[in-house]
Amino acid sequence: MNHFLKRNLLWIIGAPVGAIAGYLYWKFVGCASGTCMITSRPLNSTMYGAVMGGLLFSLFKKNPGT
Image 1 (cartoon, rainbow, N blue to C red):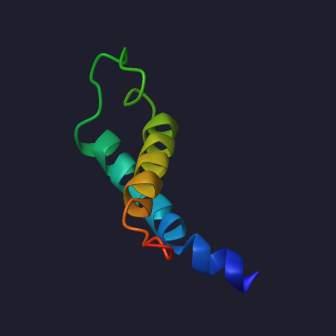
Image 2: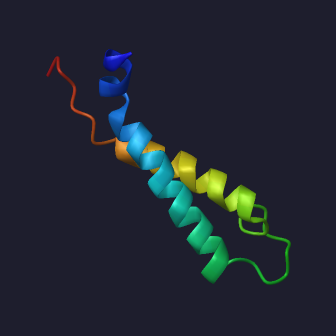
């Protein structure tokens, strides 16, 4: 299990950070009309933020072979 955490640490950190950012985006910017796919509901915005945060943080993973 320790190996799993080491390999995916940046994703594990990035997803909650992104989820918080997504929720805050919905809270303060959002979509007034309710027609926006991502920002019309807090769940959509939070999940989208979690995925984007995980992907963004995982970009900084070092490749041990290079």
